[in-house]
Image (cartoon, rainbow, N blue to C red):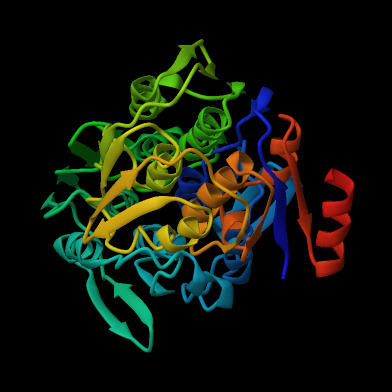
Amino acid sequence: MEQYVIKGGIPLAGDVEIGGAKNAALAILAAASMTDETVYIDNLPDVRDINALLEALDEIGAHVKRVNRHAVEINGSGVENCIVENESMKKIRASYYLLGALLGKYKRAEVPLPGGCNIGSRPIDQHLKGFKAMGAVTRIEHGFIIAEAEELHGAHIFLDMVSVGATINIMMAAAMADGNTIIENAAKEPHVVDVANFLNSMGASIKGAGTDVIRIRGVKSLHKTEYSIIPDQIEAGTFMFAAAVTGGDVVLHNVIPKHLEATSAKLTELGCEVTEYDDAVRVRAIGKLQGTHVKTMPYPGFPTDMQPQIAVTLALAEGTSIVTESIFENRFRYVDELARMGASIKVEGNVAVISGVEKFTGARVSAPDLRAGAALVIAGLAAEGITIVDDIYYIERGYENLDEKLRGLGAKIEKVASEKEIQKFRLKVG
C-alpha cells in the first residue's frame, strides 16, 4: 500500500494549477452516453473515480477514446447493455449518475448501489421519487438499483431535501422525456450548473440551473458537442487552507473565484489575506490564525467537502472554534487521527468543539475518506517532524498529483510504498 510521507513546518509558496471538477466530470461523462454522436470533453481530472467511470462506460458498449490525460471522446451509439456490472463502480458514489443517463436515453438502467467514502448514508430515495414521477418503475435487487419505463413523461417534482445527486439525475432523465419537467428545491451547486450547460450544449432545453427551480423541456435526441469542465472548487479550497495552515503565500490558477466565496470568507475571518483575480485567487497567511465558527450547508453555504480542511486549520488557530456538520453524519472520523498529532477536538453528535493548540507533531495517521485524507496531509504539512499518511488510495480518488503539486509549492512530501522508502526519505530530509 502506498503512503505519503511528509516533513512539515515549511510555509507553502508559489503558484499551483487547479484541475477540473471531479464531481461535475462524473455526471458529465455519464450524460455523454446519451447521444449517438461523438462528444469531446476536456479539463478532466485524471483521478481514480473518473477512470472507473470511463471503464464502466466502455464495458456497456460506449466508445471511449482517451485523447490525452485530461481529454476524452465518448460515443454512446454502441451502448447495448444498460446493466452496469463493473466491480469498481460499486466503490464510487457517482455510479448512480448512470441511472439518470441510461434511463433518459434507453428507458432502462441497472446500476450498483452507490459506494464511495464512509462519511454517512447516501439515500437515493429522492432520485427514485423523481424517476417514479416521470413514469419509471424502480426497485432494488441484489445490491442493484433497477429503473425502467415504457416512456418517460414530464413531471412536477418537489425534492424533500436539497440533493445534488438527485437534482442531476432527474435533470438527465428529464432531458429526453416527453413534455416539461419542473424540479423544485433543486440543488444550486456549480456542478449542477455545469451539467445543465453540458446537456444544453448537446441540444437539451434546461433553464434555471443554479436556482432552486429548474425547468426542463424534453427533446427527442441529443447531439455532439465539445465541452470543458469547470475547475474543482474543493481541490482549490484544499490548497487555500494548506496555504493558511502553513503560514504560506499561494496563488491558485484556473479557478472561478465566485465558486470559492464561502471558503474565501472563512479564510478572511481566520486572519488571512485573500485576493481575487479573473481566474486566480491568492491566499496569504499574515500573523496568527484566529478561531471562528462554521456550519456546513448546501451551496452557496460552506461545503461539507471542505469541513475536514477547515477543522485542521482551526485546530491551530487561537481560541475555541465550533464546527457544525449538517450534511453527513460520519464526517468527523478523522478527529482521532488528528488527536495523534496533538489536536484538541471534542465531538458531540454533529458538532466539533476545537480548542486551538500551538503546534502539531508528526505522527502516523490513516486517511478515513477522501477529504479527511487531504486534511491529514495539510496537518502533516504544518506539523513539526515527520508525518506518514496511510490509505492514500482514498485521496487519489479525488486529487490528481497532490504530492507533486505540493512539492511545486516547496513542501517536502513523497509518495512511498515501503518502510525502506520511508527511512530513505527521513535520511534525505534530515
